[in-house]
Length: 284
Image (cartoon, rainbow, N blue to C red; front, top):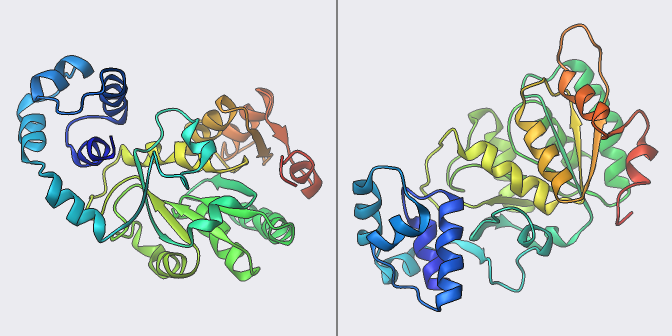
């Protein structure tokens, strides 16, 4: 079944939902050698058939295994694959990584928020991240600008552990502003992606990576999220997984924290002191 996983990872044209449909049929029928026509039928494929056909028929297993041999990866069936991620919606078929994979075994909190973070967000992070590190929490975020970057950097400066989840291959750094941080984390901490090397940056990959951030973390803390924010996707996925969601309130005039305020109204825990987070983390 891992051979099929590998082909699906490299197959162009199918979404993660479609790939899981194929995998479930394969498990049920104990059959893996699907034709393009069978893939179309199983997934109710609505895209350009030529893209799927060219990709699927061009995938040679020996070549794929050669590519995999040059990458660090956990398949869905690996014993080290995170159990909490395995139980999330449409988990990655493979987790590609650089750094210390053991970081996944530590208590962790996702800290996410605005890319255009204000000085207020930075001040909040300076107050909470070092305290989380003191309590042996791994800081998880998305290696983007703003809150993500500040969270990772503060974890490093505080002597803690941090995990970044990205939406492209691990040989690509996006945005360029975090290149030094990206290299440091790949060498001494942990960077994850569900995409193999040479996978380019695509807009829809970034909301998809949010489910991994939520899936590997014990809880999610949102700082400065507007009403339409990728951070809210992460928070919603965490809620659906039965995990704790925390929101930092902000000022009400600019709309910079409206997403956080809505989260609080919907039941996320309002955080104004460190204990508000620590007392509800399951492994604290």
